[in-house]
Length: 176
Image (cartoon, rainbow, N blue to C red; front, top):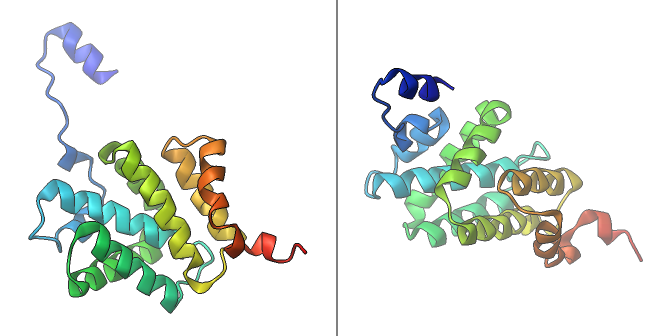
């Protein structure tokens, strides 16, 4: 609305830079990724935070989940193990401190930064992190569903990805 009014009044309208849209969480994590181009660092910061968001959905981040997040971040970003550990620790810390308020904002930012293929890759990674301790809890599954919705996935698309992890879903483990 403001931009519309500015244009009607003949006031110059400049596009908001991606940096201005960064959340505090993304900025804090991205600062630690100095060797990466700024756009890639922001992307990775949001990616790692969303992984931590799912790992902490049941209010516990297991060692297996942490280790899986580190492997995924190292592989996805092409960074060394030391840097991956640092990024994951920062993401977990930010999730524990600000997860409730930042979760939506960071996921929305990731949605703007990522391609459709990267979003689908993230969805698979979220299930992989949740399954790291051999069980995907209902809390974790519900959190992944919320993220998938924010990323624009239909229920059918979400279900297709989820089905590849059926053997790890707690809700299905009790079904004979």
